[in-house]
Length: 294
Image 1: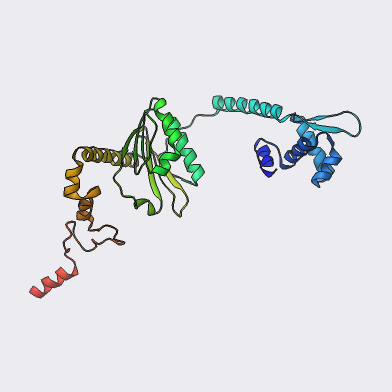
Image 2 (image 1 turned 60 degrees about the horizontal axis):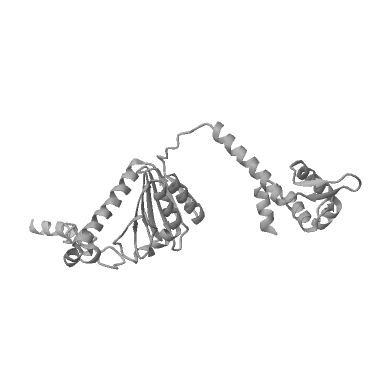
């Protein structure tokens, strides 16, 4: 019952108007007094609500005393509201001042529903290209939306981690990042729409779903370079996978360790106080040695 009231309110009825409509739908023809008694609301408020419902064409009133009220079939109410809403949308589209939609600032979204809805909207608006970097959970969530992108004549490239099967027409390639990565504050995802709009976010984990949208050139270029770097690595792995793994380790761990000094699964960076090559840096100890020589 509460859900029905909520959706009636979404259609433009007040809380009391929604309750009156519901009573009439359940009980049929009623007087204002009978409705007020069932709702435990003052008769003056009920009569006021019924008068507004009659003006909206949602209830019928009889002549004579006492006045009887009857709800118009909900199908008829829905058709009228839909027609009025569509007419209002057409008018606003035609007469609303056009504004510059360039989003060079950084805009944030929070909540799974808001973030997912925005991603779906932006994918539908893509005109030339969409580059997506997704985990299997997000790829499955957006599977139907991704399927429609190539049908729009848009080139779609999706980088994924783990096993996920995407629809035909989606150019998909696997990413080499490790499985334990999503444990770090949620699964990261990125989308780059028409090399213009960057969407970066996290989903899953203990924190709420978050996303950032921007058309800032620096962020757009960063995502573009990062995405195609992964494409190049993917192609190299396809051609020289065994040789690369023999020399650098799976997912090129040896290269990463060389420049960070971080060993696999180390909780804290092990390269503090070391140079890029992992050698001791010239800090206080080196300074002390120089003083001793003097």
